Image (cartoon, rainbow, N blue to C red):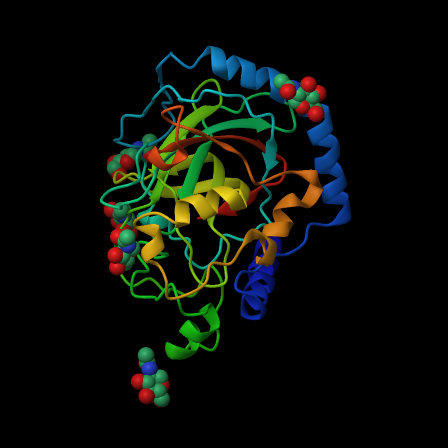
Length: 321
Ligand SMILES: *[C@@H]1O[C@H](CO)[C@@H](O)[C@H](O)[C@H]1NC(C)=O
Ligand SMILES: *[C@@H]1O[C@H](CO)[C@@H](O)[C@H](O)[C@H]1NC(C)=O
Ligand SMILES: *[C@@H]1O[C@H](CO)[C@@H](O)[C@H](O)[C@H]1NC(C)=O
Ligand SMILES: *[C@@H]1O[C@H](CO)[C@@H](O)[C@H](O)[C@H]1NC(C)=O
Ligand SMILES: *[C@@H]1O[C@H](CO)[C@@H](O)[C@H](O)[C@H]1NC(C)=O
């Protein structure tokens, strides 16, 4: 608890200095993750092979310890290629100011009415402690729409720097995770789904756009031992991983040139190289930029599948309420 508060306080201070807060991981944590990653690399490769083999099987999720009225069944993840990248996400990577658990619901398609290039996030979770797939982990995603807005925060301009937004709202004591900035109850491009018995899940969304001062990214958080309300939002859970996923610069150029992304002309897009948080995703030698494959086997502009293996450190838990 004490550690949590410390984290929130320093993260909030960092927010004011940069468009997004981030604390660097300690040397010992990085070293431990590096070793875990090396130790698990072969397991990750064989996990990916098993995922390929299972792709035509629809698995029914039969967890009984979650108090939810939602019937959860995981669609067979859909991917055509194996990427051998492990992306380890740490609790220390920022959730940013647009985290909003009350709008995150259990579903496998979080698009709603948002227009953009279809994107399937195909996720496998592996525990870095055991190097085994982690079933029943809740994977939580949120990102902006094709012109930079976040649901539940649509009253905040995606083109105004965060500090300026705070100034305009007369907020002088912003505290990340505490100060309530939400402006509505829309839920688009927010969703969560648990991994199945094989540690796999899939989420359908659209390719995100961009907002001021940040590279294109998708927020992702992993919970274990979670419970949900009747409306499918999380009551409580232990966060074992918080991170941001990025895309390749060339792919971004291609997608930003088409409708409706290209209508976002008010600001210049921040590239990965210029982003203040991007480089932190590589801490410990991992790669948060994972390649994509075209869903139709031809053109990513028609839709794409992104295959990510997330290695989580189940001994590094942050309690979330
Ligand atoms: C995945 O990466 C590991 C570590 O670099 C390597 O040993 C393994 O052969 C790779 N597997 C595949 C299928 O590429
Ligand atoms: C589950 O939720 C319902 C409705 O909120 C409540 O009545 C019930 O006691 C809960 N059950 C458990 C096991 O927590
Ligand atoms: C779910 O229920 C909680 C508690 O009643 C509420 O705060 C939240 O806004 C609801 N979220 C959705 C998406 O219905
Ligand atoms: C993104 O969301 C904002 C806020 O709701 C909306 O004004 C905008 O039209 C949306 N972008 C697209 C391309 O629909
Ligand atoms: C912020 O404070 C100024 C000066 O006191 C006031 O004119 C303005 O209406 C306030 N804005 C908001 C959003 O409360």
